[in-house]
Image 1 (cartoon, rainbow over the protein chains, first blue to last red):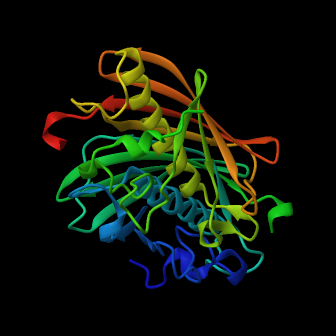
Image 2: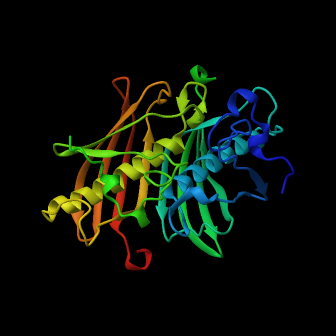
Length: 154
Length: 154
């Protein structure tokens, strides 16, 4: 895996996100990395991230899938351009749509692993498939449709 | 609107959810109510629920849609059975799938309103459509497929 997380390459102004901003002290601060053609994120849920005793809340799962997906989209865009992540002009992506299928409860007492794969890149739109597993079982799958950040949000 | 929120009718063991549990002090503690045939939830985002300056994070939006959807499913199941919410045996729903379309950024400096409508009830499965608006504009739409909680999670 690369040493520096995708999210640690975001400029300060875009590093306050609850899901992945390194400057959001109350946030999840997820970190994603390349592992060959796949992106990987290991997330350790906290006790209050629960849905019910023993299991992770679906909204936290959706959040981690969301930020891992948009981070993977940004990293893939840099890769496709042959550029190092974080170099200017910055390439950042926001979520146009998010879909999550919850296949089984995700245990809260162990780290979860997310793996992302870019399925499609077309213009400003990148589709990322994400699989979330824990204790060797796939607990959820997700699809993130990411679009390059519009100018008015920069 | 009814006086008591759907989520305040959940039994204690199912009231620790990060999204809607009244006993989760670090959670979002969303509250949903009937307003005729629709369910409504008004949620005030906190400053750290941001994606970028001025706007709400998509994972928080997904979370609020998720818990408003499963809450609406539970309330609809009680209604269909002609029972008061919270009476035993408890009817609780979990999320099988969640889909969110982000139509425009959601302002963080004002409450958001979610409205839910039951589209389909079949056996243990209830589909709820949710619309999220802020400042008079629809910012996101969601679909929650909820299933009655399996026995092994009770």
